[in-house]
Length: 148
Image 1 (spheres, rainbow, N blue to C red):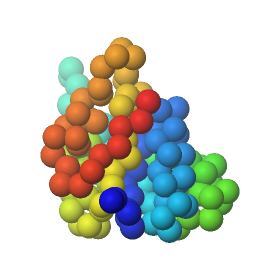
Image 2 (image 1 turned 180 degrees about the vertical axis):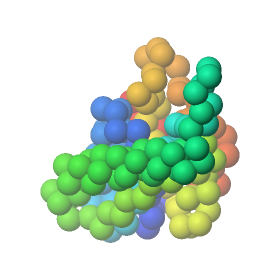
Image 3 (image 1 turned 135 degrees about the vertical axis):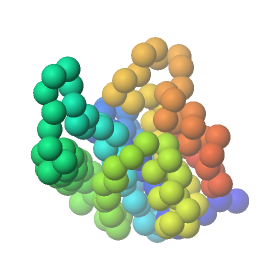
C-alpha cells in the first residue's frame, strides 16, 4: 500500500492546480508527508523580434523578472493553503520545459507521489489530458495522481 512521505505538486496557478494542491495537502495530512510545490517558468524571452533586439543583459533581466513574479505567485498560493493543513510545504520555481523540470524534481527529491492537475491554464478541452500531465505520467518513476 502506498504511504507517501514526499509529495510533489506542480502548479501553474490555475484553479485546476489549486484543486491538485488541496488533494495533495489532504493526502499529506493523512500520512504525515511533506509537500513540495513546483512552478516551472516556461516562457522564453527572445533576444530579437522583427527589427528590434535586446542585449543579453536585458534578456537575463527579463527572465529574472519572470522568475521573481512566479515566486511571488507561488508564495501567495502557499499562503492560501499551507497554514490551514498543518503540513510541511516547500515551494520552488525552476526555468525550463515543464515536464522535464517536474521529472528532475521528482528524481532529485526522491518524490514518491506526484499530484498534478489533468488540465492547466491552457486546457483546451475538458475531456483531454494536458500535455504536461501526459508527459509527466509517461516519464514518472513514482505513482502519479491526476486530479480534475
